[in-house]
Length: 270
Image (cartoon, rainbow, N blue to C red; front, top):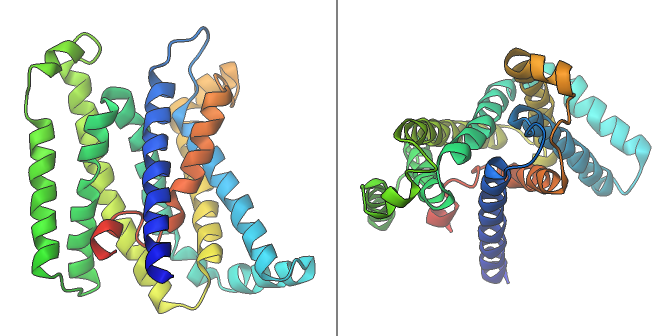
């Protein structure tokens, strides 16, 4: 049963992450009248939805009692400020990472992005070895070498790139590549850091995700104010939002729910 559950989880993860990449890429390149939605606001909305969903899950675990829910949130979050503050570091990194993914998909095709972003498996493995003192088997190291080889081949210039040159300039491809590589390193560090916190405390993953979402919303709103404050004041917070945008936001809300590993080395340790 546990083995079947693992493979079912893997299948759902593959479907969800693939649909996220394709819909996000399509939403960032779709040409419509009016302003395009701001990726910074989409990140904030996703964090708020994640908080709401995790609160509902905690409510369910507390036998649908509002009094029990209030007590749990008060005892686990408000009464433990230092434990809550520990989540500020990975939350800030996750917020940066989510914004970088929008930048990457605005400048890279979906296939190149998806393969290159799998380097987060390598970065997470390296951080887990250095921060958690984990040991990798020969097959796991071999898998990482094969992964790096595959990413190198994807980035190798080919004739097909000439067909995309009209849509993506060399400069924009470089920006997209740097964005996705930075996201890989931030993903690896934040994922291992969060896993370390989970192993050192007894708080549930839902409480930890609420804490992550809280700080992520704050950092996200700061990013909206700094980078898109003028556009928000001119056209509104939800400018350019449509049905496709909300699908992307919901998928992104679901995407980081395996935060303990951040979806990063799940295939290797499966």
